[in-house]
Amino acid sequence: MEQMIVKVGLASCGLAAGAEDVYLKLREYLGENPGAFRLAETACNGMCFEEPVVELCGLDLGKVTLGRVNPENILPLVQEYKSGKLPSSNIILAERHPAVRNELMANQKRIVLQNCGIIDPLSIGDYEERGGYAALRKALKLSPQAIIDEIQNSGLRGRGGAGFSTGLKWALCAASKSDKKYVICNADEGDPGAFMDRSMLEGDPHKVLEGMIIGAYAMGSDEGYIYCRAEYPLAIKHLNAAIKAAQERNYLGNNILGTGFSFKLHIKEGAGAFVCGEETALIHSIEGKRGMPTIRPPFPAERGLWDKPTNINNVETWANIAWIIQNGAKAFRQMGTQRSPGTKVFALAGMIAGSGLIEIPMGMTLGDIIYKVGGGMKTDKPFKALQIGGPSGGCVPADLLDTIVDYDSITATGAIMGSGGMVVMDTGTCMVDVARYFLNFTQNESCGKCTFCRIGTRRMLEILTRITEGRGVPEDLDKLEDLAKNIIKGSLCGLGQSAPNPVLTTLKYFRDEYLAHINDKRCPAGVCTVLLRFEINPDKCIGCTACARACPVNCISGYVKKPHLIDQSQCIQCGQCYKVCKFDAITKG
Image (cartoon, rainbow, N blue to C red; front, top):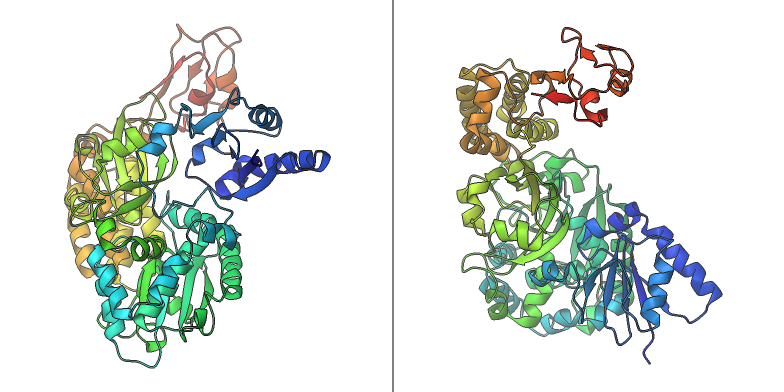
């Protein structure tokens, strides 16, 4: 009989949910029962909402994945599997049996994430067993031009957000004449609600390394950098371990695999500046300068890092390269759409049941992503909007859920694909407040170089704040649109050029909410607290005094077991009374 294997997901999401305690409990059991099973580590399989996650495999039952386990229930579940029985609870995925999340995983197509949650990210052997570095061996037998042609023929577009042809980008860098060239991986993931890069680097760092090595060979580079923000300590740990292991196997370093090609790789830890996701600002940061964008042209392919030709792709783009080389451009084009081939990784967050990481073929509709892959809404409130593309993106309303996922279709809505963040919102969300939130983020992250970005976003934020506080006037909407157009035209980099997107899309699709805030001094979603009025229904109030005790300004009065009253002249609309009332006696509106 094959040996039973127990894999514990120890990525950031798993650790935050208590996976380390589960792992230690299993290790303690093994100490008392040597050989009972083999304990292994892995990363996140994408189902962050089910963490801690443990996979059981190696026996006739096939792979069985358990979700939301804890140190108290894990051993009985493992023992059931070992005895030849399906665990009695906590099953979320099963290879040969029905399971609650099977359909969600079946509707995905995994290329970039094919090893995440399966291999030990610290084991180069695990990566090689699943075909790792075979593409590099194949590529080193091809000419650099043949590799570039294959990537260009695949139609792979940069997954960092702009959607520029990866093959063309490589060709431009390869054509630049220089004694030195660099390749860079942009892992400076700063969008609120986005965690694609982090999960990929934590779960399968060698896939990114292999793509970078192939790209370096194709473009004639002998040195590269991975620019990863320091807030990702586990990703950086796994990258360092992967680089060391690849050097020991001679996939990195001098005379790689005896071909005469040499390539060395460094990690640069970023300090968390969102603007450093822009390629010229990122380059300056690596050089030790302040991260600020510069005018293009010249583009990095001509003059980049230390004035040498440089190619920059993001984590997901690099993670596609080995698959394309190994399987061919034709196979890649069989997925997705004609103008946007392949798959796309998204981070699902917000009011969605299946928050986590998914990978779907381009061409799937937004509605199918939410309901067939993401498991539908988290609450009983209806879907309202989807924020896609991060703070640089836009809000797509419910009546556009038939929109397919490709670069052109998403752009047509007023949003952008971005690097892959999706925040799902229900009817309890105020769209004016959402626009204010994202604009506040980009305003804070502006490097300040461009006047329109530095001052224009500040003026827009002031207007939005006034509107959410009930001090807006009808003319504010024209001012917002006028400022937005000028900021887009007058900003140097993508941060300023896209900062107004959340405002413009909410004005386009949810203008009635702006008008309600301005004309009626009312927040339809009940979110903007300054516009709320809290009242106690005397027919429901039993006089438990919970609201009075929770009120920070003591504006609620009344006797025990008698209806209470809110002094509206003293109420600060904090909502604490509404939150603590267990009898639905307090209304807001």
